Length: 64
Image (tube, rainbow, N blue to C red; front, side, top):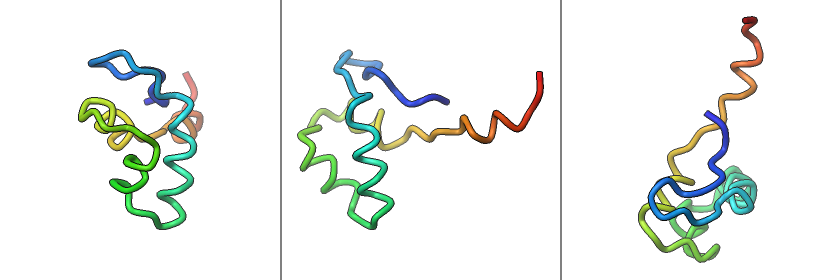
């Protein structure tokens, strides 16, 4: 799955926020607090960022 560009439910742009979220969570911050700090308050948008995983690198291993 590629990174989400927009929320599927409300259409809010999320692509510019995904990298910051990923970086801060990998540094050990609580995902809930990171989303609050970034101003992402809608449940639908939080779901989009929190549950998406980037598997592009794994898919690149396979040939067509």
